[in-house]
Image 1 (cartoon, rainbow, N blue to C red):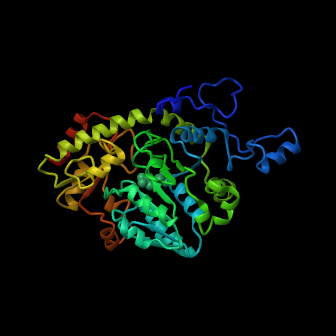
Image 2 (cartoon, protein in one colour):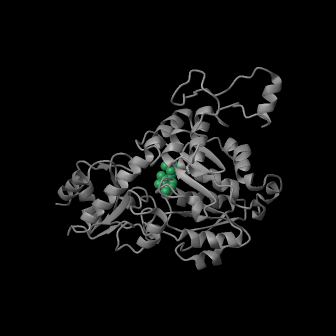
Image 3 (cartoon, rainbow, N blue to C red):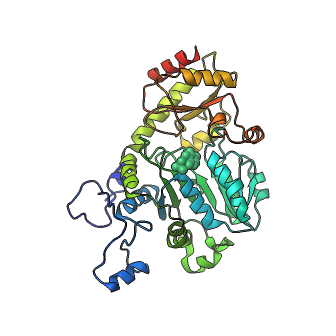
Length: 410
Ligand SMILES: *Cc1c(COP(=O)(O)O)cnc(C)c1O
């Protein structure tokens, strides 16, 4: 068959085995364990010489089918589905880091990732080197022999900063360090991480993939493009497994031991979500672009931050990496924290809720919520302002959303 389109690949990924009843959508295999005919077959499965499922903390047919679809559409070497985006981040870092390692990253991070890096990892002797990821020379200067990863978010939240991914991955490659990118804010249909030198991609599938906010999930996507012989921790394993090293480490050790595999129910819901993801994304991102262009003109709004605006300083790099409408999240500033709270409380259609890329449009005041337990100094360092509101645009019409903005700003 000719090379299928993105949607064609999603909808035509074959099952690992034919279904006993020819079910058209993958059944939910809600079973903790799987039975064997003989002790010999059991031995083969448990020692990895046969691909049979044994126990659903390790693999499960429904979850594996979701992983297979993601592998098909991304062209990845290995995909592991976890029960949250944070589980995908923590499993990845624990596979790469050891005491004495450092991670080169930015302060502009998702709140829990920042907390995991600065508090949780510190207890295990892993150093975090914060730098300006829009400055490739600064990244290069921070990398040394103990750097286990360059970690970045492709559009930071809520600052909406965009690093030049080819520049960063070029520096990392030359230094022999893998690039780990959290790409949650732009889905696979619009952003091909592999083409920008990302070695390990992390996605919170809670967001665009789920769509309906039906459950939490996370993905670790290994492109098999890194030479792991250069890794202080994985170098020994790489002599045996070559480009498969990271996925072998993940599947044979880390994810089994940490026990955060995706549940079959979630995999079923997110497989359905994947089928409509590009349609939903096209609609939500185009609505977001149209809405911010209208909001920019309203006198009550001090500033609008969206990298799809021509006036945005990341517009050119954003367009080169993510296309015309760079996602469905934007922020805007009002004159004060009080004005921001007043606006939030007057919303009628837009929901006051955290989460991103639900089918419904959501508003949140990041400084008092996601970053609410951080000190004002840390918030300043992270560029999280008291005047900022973050909007995640859903599937409502531009007119309905604009009307809610106008009435809430009155
Ligand atoms: C939501 C989010 C996460 C965490 O994902 P969960 O599924 O909530 O654990 C990580 N990174 C980014 C950019 C996110 O938006």
